[in-house]
Each structure stands twice: as structure tokens, then as C-alpha cells.
Amino acid sequence: MALHGTSKQYIVERLEREGHTALLEAVRSGQITALTAATSLGWVRRPPLMGGSTHQAHRRDFRLRKARGELGPGEKMELIYGPSPAMGSCFASREALRAAWTAVRDELLGRANPGRRPAAFYEFEWDGPRPAYDVERSTLWRAGKLSEAERAVLEHEWKATFTEAQPDDFTLSDGSGEILRGDCARAAHYAWADIPRELVKRWTSAERRRRLRRARGERQPVAPAEEAAVK
Picture 1 (cartoon, rainbow, N blue to C red):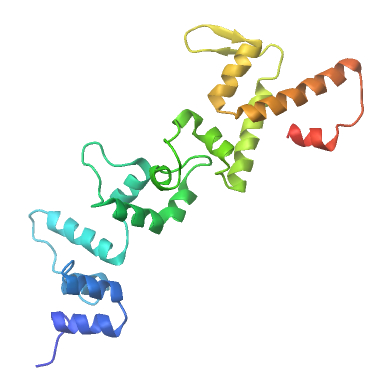
Picture 2 (cartoon, rainbow, N blue to C red):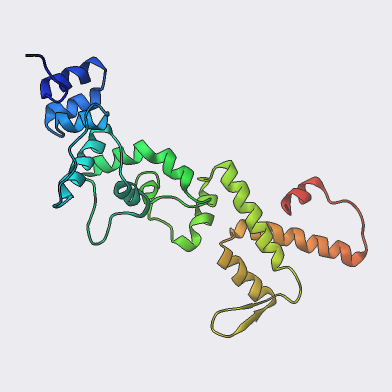
């Protein structure tokens, strides 16, 4: 009798013939059934569920993603934010976690905001404790861990924030009802924006020189190095 489209032998032979190595190994090792592999490739259609729980379907989908080397939303969420305090880790071992991070590293880094990193980055690519959120961007900037594009975006943002605080009458509320003024207000503003102190020092020096020249009525052009320092 000829083998038909839903028999295990037929599916296994077709998987082998068409080069679906990962699915073939998953079927042979018992991770997934031959029918699950065939359904995922559109060779056959699984009969619809007639009521009851969908847990079995979820478990089947999880095993299929694992066989294909794919990650579901839950696994990616853990790589970004860390394991769930209530449910624990989705991964059976640290090796599995590392393999998952390696597989989707570029994708998750590409989705991150400038100067931010997923939890798995700090687990596998960072020496020391994870920096606090409020100083994460300046910490990565100082450590040279930003891409050129990220660095440009952040420095442009920081320079705009720095410039906002330069008027002589600059004030800032500290959140408790007290109004800070002058240098105290500026320092609090820089800290809130997480501007690296190295940039604050450089830009402050350049701003003071510019004010001094204006006070003297000087009109000489700004030197290229100084112009770069204030940008």
C-alpha cells in the first residue's frame, strides 16, 4: 500500500528528501510529531479543536519553535527584561539562554532605544553589575559601548538639554516645591538628563569663553576645535 501524506514514514522521508534537517531531527528525537512538522510546512491540515483546553496546542507550538531554533514572545521578553519574578525563566539552562541571545542579539539591539540595552546584554557582554536606568546611557557612552549612530543621537540630545540651561535666569523645581536657581539648577538639570560629566565640563568651558568674548566685544571667529567642542 502506498504511503499517504499523513503517515509518519512518508513525512520523515519527505523531510529528508526536501532538506528540512532541523524538523527531521526534532521528529526523530521525539521533540515533535511528524504531523506537527507536516502541518507547519503546509503539507497537511490539522483537524480543528473541538472545544476543551488549548494548552496542548500551546505546548506543541513551543516545541515546534524550539525545533526550528525560533524564539517566541515570552523568550524574547526574558532576554529584554529578565526572567519573570512570578514564573521564573523560560530557559532550561544558562547555555540555552546564551544560545537564544546569540540567535536574536542583533534583532533586539536594533529594536532598543539609543543608549539602552536588553538584560541579556548585561548578562553576557558586560563586566560588572548592570548600571541603574538613570545613568545607563552615560555609562555606556563612557565605556565606549555605543554605536556611532547612537552616540550622535545622544550627544545631540544632550547638547540641546545643556543649551536649555544656559540663560542667566534658569530655574528648576526639585520636585519638593523648592526652586533651584543658577548653577544648582543647571547641575540638577544635567543629572536628570544623564549628561556625561565630561561633556558638561567641555561645553561649560566653551560657553564661558564665548560669554567672555561677547563681554569684551570681540568678534574673532571661533577656532575649529572650540567650534567642535560646543556642537
